[in-house]
Length: 387
Image 1: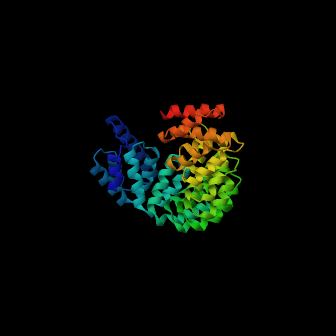
Image 2 (image 1 turned 90 degrees about the vertical axis):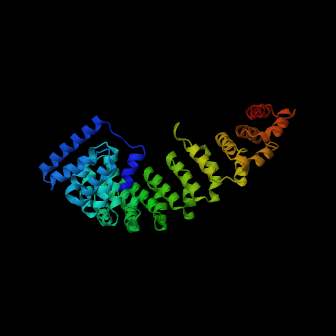
């Protein structure tokens, strides 16, 4: 308890001004009156005082109030959820999440009931609270996963994933395979990735062919988290997916698994289109290739410089420039390659690397009277970047 409140105080959380604190107190008082009228509260005066003290700037006061609310248990739960749904005070929200988690099983049903009455941000806080409850929340969540509506089932899956409970694996696999709702299936795939059990690999591999792109994406990410090499070939096939975010997810997961069978397919996927300034498929794929930072990978990239696909050649050149020392010897050798395109892009990569050791080979290339004019030009530009 003290750790969370301490983090809010020391970690740059929201510190309220006097006016903001007064507004927060007024809001909480209003909500207490509403809940008193609904009959959800016993010991209303004690609850009111404790809730108001959660806005205190003194950590010892907040901690004592939190202890009181935890001791009250279920009578305080409904109001805690209501305040969580509306308060913008970081310290109050963190305290409520911890209180609900510590109250335990009596808080589970009220939290589950609140899922359909709150927006996405609050739902995530409720998920964190249920995760803090732990084992007592598992069975109700499994029932909700199986019998709840779309929102309830999706939130149940996300919560079970955060809890990393092996008891949920079979139910989550069944949900991934059989639920008709795309969002629920994607949440089930995500949860299986969080749990990380090899038991779910076959189901996740099958879901790489799901009709919904988000399910394919989440399944690819989950397989990367599990890290089993059984997923390598299916993920390589996914590099051809029509959706660029799915291709990017496949590339990232292949990089996490680290099997070198993925290198050539990743290079071939460098012409992936899709994305914008902040996210593009080929940038993600380049980053994935860089996880295999070996001289053999550099040689494969240099081979790609000889192909007919200009986009792949340009991205392969950029990737080589980021590989550092392992790519330097192959690039210098490539300056003498018979293929003019290889020499051109090798000089370009060395210029981007801006390594002083490349000066002499580039000077020779630029001074060669028999060399292609475009190659000499790019060699001179590379020298300018180095000097």
